[in-house]
Length: 356
Ligand SMILES: Cc1ncc(COP(=O)(O)O)c(C=O)c1O
Figure (cartoon, rainbow, N blue to C red):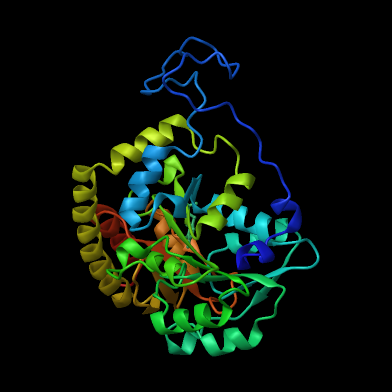
């Protein structure tokens, strides 16, 4: 049995997937109990009265080309959140299995695991070393019941990329023994290459990508699970047959047209300049003790007075993320880099109320 199959829940392997209406676009659809007329306000190309194409081929091909993998290596879903949910449902048995994650990190890994009744084991990033992933400590903490091992790079909320050699050490040691999930939601802002091509090197590696961040499509909810074909085949059994809404599919295809991608690249370059400017400005504020280097579209700020930072921001109509409830982030806030005028407004708000 393939390594992936032996890690998956047996009941998922035994499952017969839902048999959706056949996708035969050339034929008149009298097989899916749809209304034959379009609803008011429908501006979609395909018609909102019709069920969308399950796992839409054109979008999968476009995403696969963008990410440098084959279409058979990719599943699309409603954001990478859906991929995290699918992985949890495929691999985690209630009361028996666990995930291993490196906090502080993205909160959905643990939420999805807990919904599934699985345990969450932490191997914290090393704050004293710039939030470094400690592969040796992670591997020492790993146990066979930890079916999913999450590595987020660049990491939310710390903003740093995890070192490639540390990620490789984890992948080398756990290949075939756990599914290592590399979440690259923010990789476009990092200037570094994606590790998606590594799915050819490892049997049980999954990579998550999303259109929510650099492609500015958070509202469309489009994310990709990238992995070996067996993983994609199993994941197709657990995601809903019509996972993506038709307007979302069409919006994603439009946003991935070559001229739209060229515009995205220019926008990313602009935002990176703003990131540096905002970094310097925040660091100059007496309310801020330290701003961590970022490879993402946000900055993690350790504050001298996070409450006052939040208060002044809100007074100026701006909201940033309060991280003070998380271990190792007792005085920290996360600031998303906005457009120039928005960043200026934040900088001005922080100065308001400061002694002259
Ligand atoms: C690290 C990381 N992964 C995944 C996601 C989920 O993104 P989406 O479901 O919009 O693709 C987020 C959202 O903030 C994130 O920060």
